[in-house]
Structure formats: structure tokens, C-alpha cells
Image 1 (cartoon, one colour):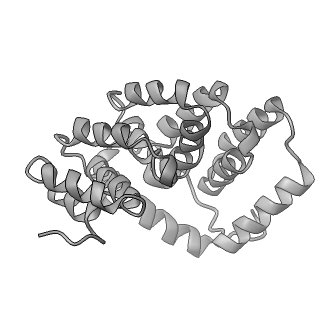
Image 2: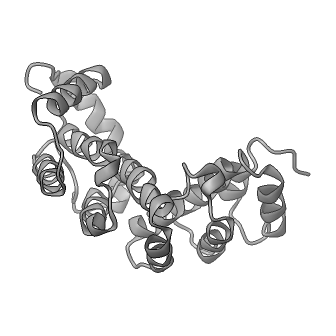
Length: 227
């Protein structure tokens, strides 16, 4: 990290990530991690090196690796933690849910939440729906906005494995919210599912057009023909 870091890039990344919207939502400066200024190719190089030098094969190693990286002070180290978490798919189990929830609530910003929720929570929804499905129904009512956003975007990568009824229900249950990240997540989730079932999403969006925010509707129907 020290070798590949660039202070100028670090400043640019911090300015972008912690801009006006972040400051408005975090007026006391909570959640600000310093950047090292490592670019994407450098991060991928480090990730490959970490996976090669420190192979993770057991659940205990998995939790230890993710937690150790997560607790380091820089943002890029948290990016590595999320990568380790979602790349070891065989070790993503329901028992690890407290770890993922911690990453979402402590990360509390889109760059971290949007990595953990679709890849880890979404994977659980696909592989352990009997337990993760009811849990997600609780998450959509959670007081933490990032947990609610995670419930919405957990559906993103499921394609034909999407539980359409649950996705639509989660959208309905959050349509009244004014928070940008919830409105965006509703539209994002529907837009992705429209790749699998465009007519179903079109019908849902038109049915709820007057209840859905303009942002959600535009995102949901971005690639659909609607009147």
C-alpha cells in the first residue's frame, strides 16, 4: 500500500467520496477513513498477492482475514476486506451474517455497502433462501438506512433466481421514503431485474408510478418503453 499509494490521488479520492452528500449525512465527520491513494490496478495486484500468500480455507481463517483487513485504518484496506469476503463464496454462510451486517453498518457509505450487499447478502439469498429470505424481510424494516438499502440491492445479481414477489414487496415497503440512497436502490433493483423480466418490471413500475419517486421510476424504466 505504501509503495503504490499516491498522496495526490488520496486527496482526490477523499474529496470525491466525502463530498457534500456525505457531509450532510455525517455532519460530525463519522466514518471518514483516510485514503492511501492506491489506484484500481494496484489494489487488484495487492489482492492477488494477499490471496496467494495467505490462502483462506476455513471459516475461522475467513473471519480473521476479513476482520483484520476491515479494522485497518485506510479505505483501500476496507476494499480489500470486502473483496476477500465475497471472493470466497464457499465460505459465505448464514453464520457469517453478523460479520456482513457489521461491515454494512460500520461502512455506512455506498462504496462499501454496495460491495457487500449484492455479493455477500445476495449470495446468501440465492444459496440459503429459507433463512436469508425472512431475515431480509426484517432488514427492509430496519432503522438503519444502509441495512434497508442492502435489503433492496441484495437482489441485484440474482437474475432468474430473483424472488420477484419479495423484490416488489421490498420496493413497495420503501417507496414512501425520501432518502436518496433508498430511492436510488429501488430503481436500481428494478432496473437490474428488468433484464430478466422486462414486462413484469414495466407493469409494476406503471402500477406504482404515482407512489414511486421520479428517481426510482426513471431508474427502473431506463431501458424500457413506457408511456
